[in-house]
Length: 401
Image (cartoon, rainbow, N blue to C red; front, top):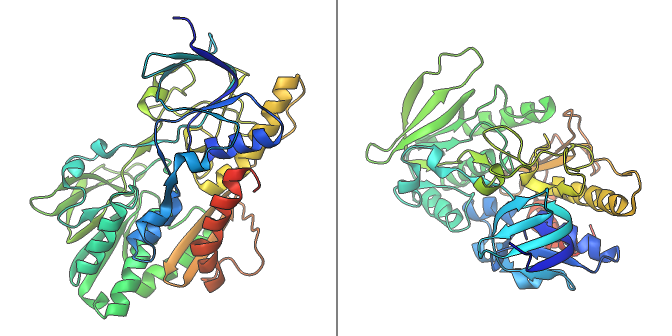
């Protein structure tokens, strides 16, 4: 099929990674850029935790896509069906085929709700919600307020997920609310984690252990949710410890904050660009973000298979790397930029308190703010609630930060 359009640089995805990369490329003088993005709305997802915790309104997290699309960039309002990297073309859901000289793949990831039996049918009702969806985050707050006794279960899946701290953050914000309402002693909070520790970096793991102790949260390590029985109001969790038995057990719940497994979008998995794994992320060099087989293809953000924590802060460091290396590839120069795996995880532990975890590929702390970042701090809370959203909308999406 002949191409219906051709662009020097084609970007798949109008989320954080796609918009930020396009804005930076425009500032570098590139004038033939197109973004393929079907959604009319752009979301600032990190605030969904605060929506679910009753701190911010959900409307504050969304803006029209037209408002964040960089000036001079062609917006193709369609979805991608597949990519043909040997032909340098992208096929859209409409059937149109768009050609490119250079491709940036940044469509984000997908939430695999159906991988947990019974979960999809009960989302948003009977005490089951998730801050991982725009429409459900307000429901989380509704259910938190309605809970005055019983058992509250907060889950986290195995594998890479976006904002790996989010499953814990809502547990702490909920417990803080219940403590302030004087009902925490009548509630049994349970946190189900797939790993053997609270966090991958020991310093922050110890700090979070103290937070759990303060709220009386029972932590079940090396388990993940595999099924929900809405009629019995029970969640089934499985032992996934190395060498474990794989046995399951059921926990009753009055409130369930469920986080589903996550993977690359299904259409990405089917392209030649995907790694040969069940999650199917785009296979790139973890330092340059260049595809390992197609040198004119780059990927960043949640869709790439770089082994960093999938956060917006990671994109803030990845985007300059991709832009510098893409421009070098276009000019036939060696790629000058290298991404070290930096990620940042702001962990809200109460209203007015936050830990800021910053680290690289090797789990080395890489703090960018002064002071003790292993301590719960009010100024970090202000950063989370006000500073980071301001920087996101006014600087990052405009290629300035």
